[in-house]
Every structure is written in C-alpha cells, then in structure tokens.
Image (tube, one colour):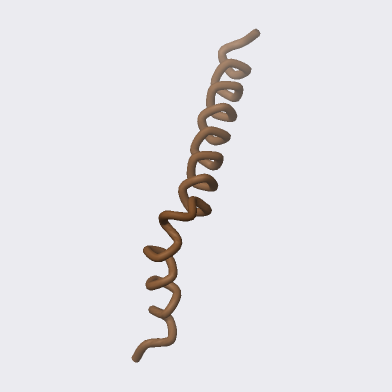
Length: 45
C-alpha cells in the first residue's frame, strides 16, 4: 500500500471512531436531561 492509502485508511478509522463515540455520547440516557435544556435555546429571546 502507498502512503496515500495508509493516510486514507487511518483517517477513515479515526473519523469512524469519533462519529461512533459521539453517537453513543448523545444517545446515552444519563445525558438526556443535559441535552434537553439545550433544546430550548433557539426559542428563548
């Protein structure tokens, strides 16, 4: 594999891990209250 292949492979794996961890962080039940209070921000004056 060339250096460009390795860079692409590593970058793809890193992005996958970041997106997966963000998904599980956002949908964890104990974080529900924390994220619900941020849902009202656009409606406040």
